Image 1 (spheres, rainbow, N blue to C red):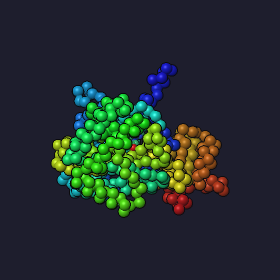
Image 2 (image 1 turned 180 degrees about the horizontal axis):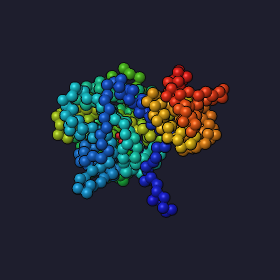
Image 3 (image 1 turned 90 degrees about the vertical axis):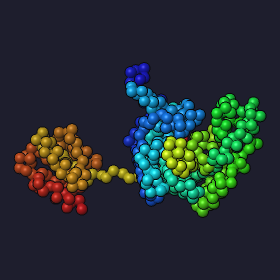
Image 4 (image 1 turned 180 degrees about the vertical axis):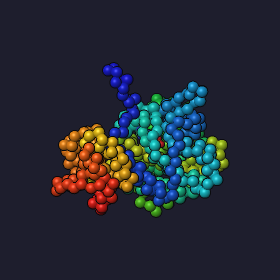
Length: 427
Ligand code: AMP
């Protein structure tokens, strides 16, 4: 609450007001269209999950779990969290709902709010929306490339320009531990040249040092061993194929040996999507990212199930939706206004409006008003073709006036006939 006793949204959390809705809806509609085309089914997982889903899935040592998760405990003692990201909830739902018996691959997509206790700034909020696409049950490199292409297609359909996709492979349980050891050794030798944060990361998240944007760390990173030179044969082959498939598409990708994504469950392919120029100091705000997570479902007690996914940040995408070639679905305009005079007529109006609604004819009204003039003014402003006028006299005579707003001509029809009469007129 503010000092004056007025409530405000919590820090970093915003209303999405009506004038912004069309942009959110547009992103949803493009996602849905593309999801339908590629055979993804929509899923809603809950906003509240068992906290363990993220501690175990996203990873205890990650920034998301350590610093950013909104945690709560119920009166019954359940430890829950507001979901900070989508993939672990999907993996939980996959197992809980026996999706391993569904036809493979299981292709799911979602759109909804997520929560992270971050320092609010442009493009970074504490409640934000994401869409995500997951392909569960296949390890083929073609699937990784397909998912990246889907993301690219969504953004292109939204007319976002200047896109670049950074891609890397972070190996698997075969080759990554050895690489991390090498990396740790290298960074330990150079510890004094790392930023404070990365000195801490040396203990529990060495890989994450690679995507630090600090100038000092950038210098150290230049000579660090690169994962690409340390992949096992299988991971190397997989990554090579992903790139070969991407070469078949229009997707503008570039290799980024420093991209790691920093969540525990990723294996092999990781990628992030950007638009515009990179800021040397700040890096770039990604529009989204994703990668393969071949071990997550097994980690949650399911069968060994390879999977890959991606998520896009809706706020950051909405900020880019200014292209005048973009068309938005606007609500249907009413062509008829129903004006009523007096209580008796007002009561009658309720039935009549329902009849019109059931017949699919949109009728505007202003039930809070009583006299005719202000209602006609509104009808004028709305540029409707017809205004129906119902007064006490008309109700008694079981009639209603149809006024043609262009010519000003009026005629009376039977109340029971007005819906069919209007249907004819509006054809
Ligand atoms: P991540 O999986 O963390 O890379 O998140 C995927 C995408 O969601 C990011 O690329 C951003 O576009 C968006 N995103 C993540 N965190 C936030 C946030 N705090 N506020 C707004 N958008 C976010």
